[in-house]
Image (cartoon, rainbow, N blue to C red; front, side, top):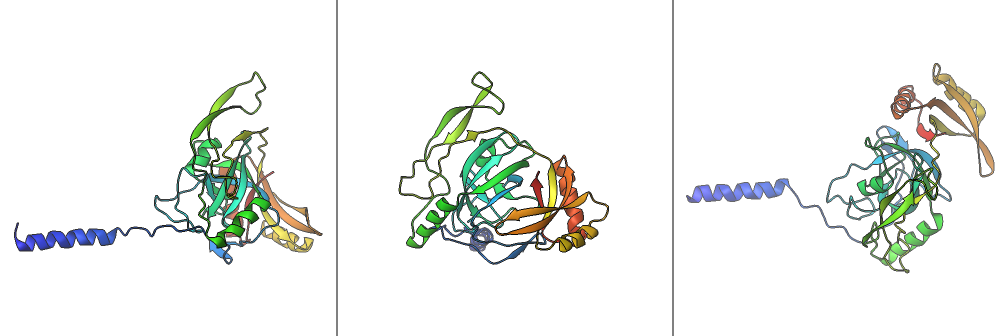
Length: 289
């Protein structure tokens, strides 16, 4: 090979390396809240919640291998992890598939999903354990473990190295399917056992529990009006849609929400959400029941 050809080969190899940079390594996880931000034209408002119990739609996260999460962890499709648009990072939540009753404790360590009609995104591992359907979208409830999250976040300033899921073996546990009794149908679910040590506040149980299914119709909801007349004004913007105002009780005051529905399919709820956004109504969400 001539010197010129050799030089060209070296330059091409160098160019190839430059086009495919190696992602920076992850370090110890860090606490992250962040300012309000826009996601697909929808404003999101992260905050430290004193309670968080919401319903909505979830789907598996679309993430690339080697990606670093917002709280500085390496993305792992096999981790018991999730992404939330508003929860502090990291947080510990319990996600319940309302269609089949399966629940699992999960660590929220990233922002997302990008779709404003989804309340949380999960790793493929979580989707598998919770029995997500083939199309990936399912009705869920997300409940924040406030005490465990606070204990976890308080350690991060000490540089404690925590993992997004317990690093342990997989064992099978026989659980009754929803509606099954002692003699009813059952199947083996692969669950991950916690083996992170009693001193790790971020340790997850890894146990899938099964309760009664509680699916319901879907609604598009615009929450948080302090005065009923403000909710009525939004109602007028939604003329022609099956919209109505409902009181929402919480804390020391009554708020008013506008709900549109019910819808019996995800496609219909997504379509209604798009119409609400097109009419200039801000912060709509899809909820169950």
